[in-house]
Length: 131
Image (cartoon, rainbow, N blue to C red; front, top):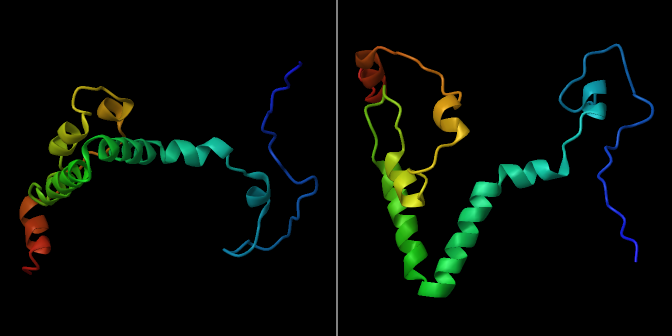
């Protein structure tokens, strides 16, 4: 038996509908006609969430409903703990609960988090609505 591979071919229109006017939100411009999303894009964007849901389902089947509920409550509590409004949280508690504290990823050292320094007093006053 001979197997054939299935390849995803991009589907671009053969004729572009170009107009001289600026395209609005409802109109399809040339870029919108040519641009396409790869089928794996959504899968890769939702990988972590899907993987977490699968792990919680396996934990529920193995240990019962209390284990995923406990982890969910601990994750919710970890979101409530924060720093001062002018400091970004490192989310260490969340990483420890999910087991990501011992892994090094691209976002750990080149995450694209913009470094910013704001005036602490002004930020706290705005956060507490004291003006």
